[in-house]
Each structure stands twice: as C-alpha cells, then as structure tokens.
Amino acid sequence: TDAYTISMEIQGRLSNDKFRYGLGGTLDFTSTSDDTVDQRTTVYHFNLEYELGRFFKGRIVPAIGLRGESNEVDDRFNDAITRDYAFMVTLTINSLTSF
Figure 1 (cartoon, rainbow, N blue to C red):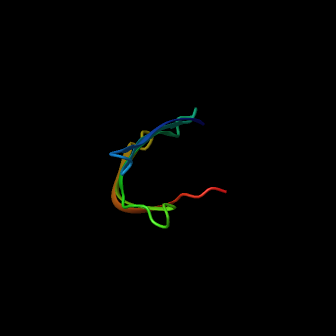
Figure 2: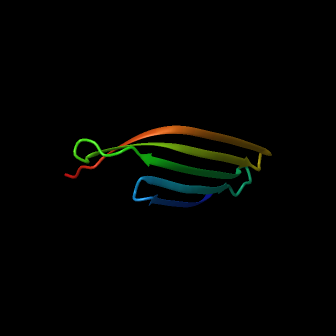
Figure 3: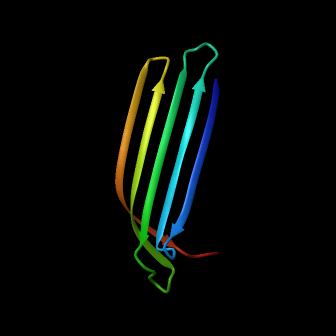
C-alpha cells in the first residue's frame, strides 16, 4: 500500500486581535500494487471567530464563529465519488493559563 498526504494550514488574527481566522486543507492519495485500491481524499476547511471579550481578569476568552468544511473521496477503483459539506456556528472558550 502506498499512501501520500499533503496538508497545509494558515491561521492568523485581524483587527486588533478581535478576529481569528484559519484556512486549511489535506490531500491524501492511497493506492496498492494489485490495483484494488486507488483513492483520492480532499478535505478543505475554514473558520472565522470574533472574540467577545476577556473575562475573569483576562484568563477566559470566549469567541463566536463560523466554520465550514468540505470532504471529497474519489474512489477510482469502484468509480464512486462521495462529497460532504458542513457549515457550523461555533462557540469557543480559550483559557489562558500556564503551568
């Protein structure tokens, strides 16, 4: 079995650190020498979050955001393509602590 994976992710902040964003994706290629598996998987995702403010003396940072995801599996052996899409509203709570 031969499997190759390529991934990339970009994350950052905008507008005085009030907005956080992320973009990423993964490509996965899988095949076998007897040609019973020949598959390509593609995953893309994005997120955009807005920080609601700092609470508990700046240690708790809640954010509300949007997240999207796209998955595609191209099974070339069985001649089938499967696609999934998701769009979500998220609530994230980060805790700024160190030990």
